[in-house]
Image 1 (cartoon, rainbow, N blue to C red):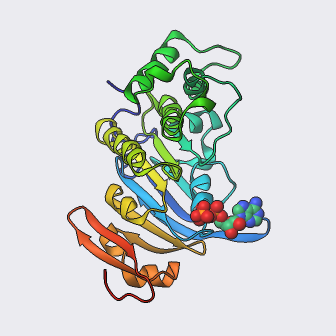
Image 2: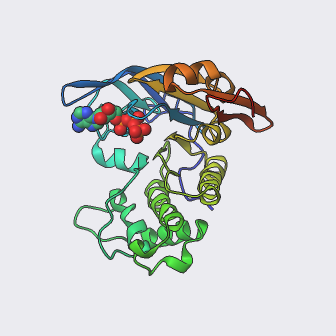
Length: 283
Ligand SMILES: Nc1ncnc2c1ncn2[C@@H]1O[C@H](COP(=O)(O)OP(=O)(O)OP(=O)(O)O)[C@@H](O)[C@H]1O
């Protein structure tokens, strides 16, 4: 069953061979006169999961919003070779779905109607959603175990259920779209560890099954390292490190950029970051 983008095509819409899903070149964002993101460059391959980490205020959300085309920036972002600045907004909305930290949810809106909002870029101006759009929304709800909640107001859901509904809207948005990108800003910040796992496993499954390319931000470093193929460490708006978790989650880098004293334990699933109390040498 296809919910999101089918496995990416090896060619861009211009016909040339393209292997990179997302390419950011010298992305720079200024807000209120301040330099928030400073010449950040990176690439993400189709089906890859890149997670941006970094201390509070480093510019993670700002970078994600720039890549989503939601913020003005200098530099260049390409989506499967297509310059983001040249893409019509409607196409952008079909190809990039963003799950923001606290989305504005219309009061009283049911889960199904909220998920259907994801189909907006696919509906003709002044048109209504088609039966196909409703079918897509229902399939996504089914996939995310939301069927018992479709007629419930979103506001009445628990944090974990609501997070699944927000993800469902994003997946409904990308359904049937080739060369799509899922951007997740702190997708698990309000969730307990069980629900964190549930949401992240789901994204990972969809990535494997549908070839979704994912870029997220996250504070939980060990979990970020466990799910992402690579981590991008952002510090004061600049790229401080980029690579597999084992290369980025080091005591030295975390001490320098987070001012944190931590112990990094190697485990089967990757590095586990444990805070070290000042009066303790070891756990
Ligand atoms: N409109 C604005 N004008 C001026 N500064 C802004 C504006 N919006 C955000 N900032 C600043 O940009 C910096 C980066 O914010 P951003 O939300 O991108 O950081 P973050 O790394 O996602 O932080 P956190 O981990 O705390 O969520 C912060 O210092 C914030 O105060």
